[in-house]
Image (tube, rainbow, N blue to C red):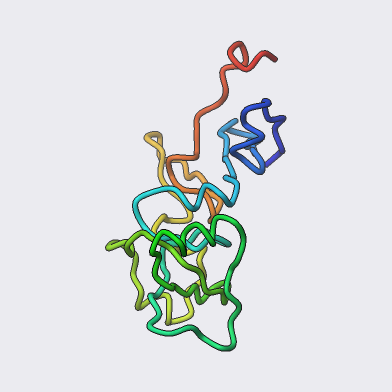
Amino acid sequence: MRRVHRTFLERFRYMAIYECRQCEREVLIPRRYTYHFGDACRCPKCGTFRVVKLKAPDKIDPVNGGFLGLLERLAGGSLYHCCFCRVQFFDRRPLDPNASRTAAHAGVSPAAETEPAADDDEDGETEEVHPEVARDEVTSPRDKASSGD
């Protein structure tokens, strides 16, 4: 993978864009603030959906602060815990029904999350996907004419 130059607008949404040297497919790494948007609760640090709702704060693990965390708490968010990052946080959204919370406590890494590590193309080739990237963030090669290069 090689790093690709981001456009001005892509700098606000993605931390990095990588391109495969062989197949020219792109992998987009989102910024952490984008984890606060969506339908289901996500860890604000690693982005995993496999979090556990807490009844009371844990005295050992730290609470994730920041401006967006404060807004989540003021909006009536519940307290959640990510066992991968060992962080507590507030979120107003419900848990993802598709995320397996039994695997989260079994010590499975966030890389083996809901998306597989590789998928098959229509021609039978295997494509590696970064563990923090959702399937919809892997794109086909850029149209060089539209990016201004």
